[in-house]
Length: 192
Figure 1 (spheres, rainbow, N blue to C red):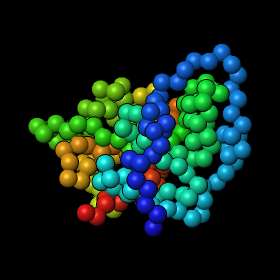
Figure 2: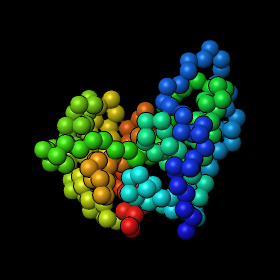
Figure 3: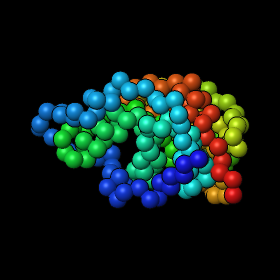
Figure 4: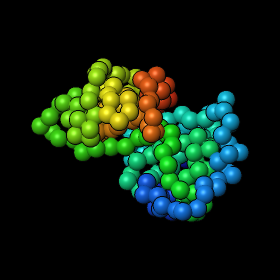
């Protein structure tokens, strides 16, 4: 098992944010193009995400990135190459697909389900369906929602913390419950 601690990512990755500079130049990212048709590797590795108390199994050719806002992204090689290109200033910002793990503060006076619904609604999404989820030591709720796009998000408590764990596929497009379920099937709570 290969252990990768995200807290040791290079500083340039930690400083990256979603605030892309607007550029008048053409989008020129040849690195992204060479990975566009790359399929997920058949072999996988385990990435530990200790700040969230979990580990996730990802294809060997995928990358993880710690964003400035504390969110961890699981990225296809083409997406990772594109982000590097934007950081260098060789491309303009646009949306991209990734799988994201983050936390929000918990309110001890409210239940997890109520907090999850309140979070989605306060961020402009209507909740269509709520279901309980338990697997790999994770337990919580999956909310299917729609705002600008349709999607599904998992909400559960971070082990040994008062934070709420959020796990979701995301892009400037609709995402599906199936995409979230596949991601969740590869996540387990870390053994202390």
